[in-house]
Length: 520
Image (cartoon, rainbow, N blue to C red; front, top):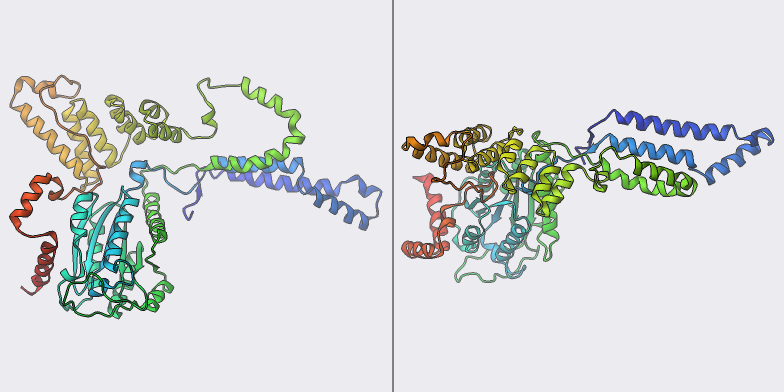
């Protein structure tokens, strides 16, 4: 609600006028009561005031109040942008996981490490449209999983992430400080709103200083404290593991919270997930509200609910007028196509409901926003209309789908131009780059066949011998999946046989190699 403002602020003058006139009318009615002519002034003041209290709001006051609420609704209160649903839930969640030997402690079942990994998986299921990354640290920090929405790739490397694979090194900078620097680089590599979530059971003085310094320049930071102040014996730890102090410095984490950081503890239920989801959603809304490409959502229609109780209070006194007003409303229908939903829902809201019901043509007719209208036409496979709608947008996503709509009609030259416009607006739009290359390949193939080259020009869709797949498997802002995720099951098994190692051994060798690189 910090972004609350009014889209049509001039209507607020009407609100002020209604309230002032209502107050003035009430005062005037009391002062000019006929009882003042027959009663002593002091007695009249007491009696008339008592009567005014008993009838604090009369018909006139309620009418002025209803008018004020109506004008407040017309002023257009707004605090959120009207972002398409397929974009509204997009986010980058960077999990920074403390992975020292103390994470084997069994004070949290089955142990801290496995409980945290289960919590990360639960958060990922709770936010399926978000991209997740994992960074692990102990004495050193390492990127375990880059930003991805690929569940199989994510599980492949999160599951074997155990404390015993972390290198035993001592570096000048704290492991958490190194991890936060990796998190900053990861957040800077994506246009998505990013949250950094630290899940740890330890906090040294150096780590505390690095954490506070990071928070000064990166506000979307949450800390999830794992374990209890008493600690516990290790569970599922390998034999010969060095002993570690498993007591959690709860007072130090409480001090961080007092300094303004978002800190909570790992819970056995979903309270911590709800807490994290609330903060992540706040980051999303803040980023969306700062993006001027989306229109502000007019929430004035909700004030109709606030008007209902006052209208019911007027019902007994105005019921004689109610029937003529209803008949008048029924006779006067300036738009014969208007329906009951027009009284309560904006066209874009009606379009969204139709889109969710799978009625894409109706959704396209209802939408006013060109991007949403284009998406509805695109899903309805009405590509000429989709291209016309996307042509009215001026965003990278709009130009991307304009290219798709044109390519679906085999207007390859125009499609290539649209993809290049999308890349000019957002050079990191991987799907636009891939589709541009696909269209260029089609045009190069047609150039070698002069008889069909003319048929590839815009305005002609008779080229049937060459097809390209332009169906976006994910939203264009999504990160490209790593090569492993594109392998089939048999290929992946064969690849694992060839490297003769497990993902856990691979991570252990990679982490050790990374710690040696600075010394070379």
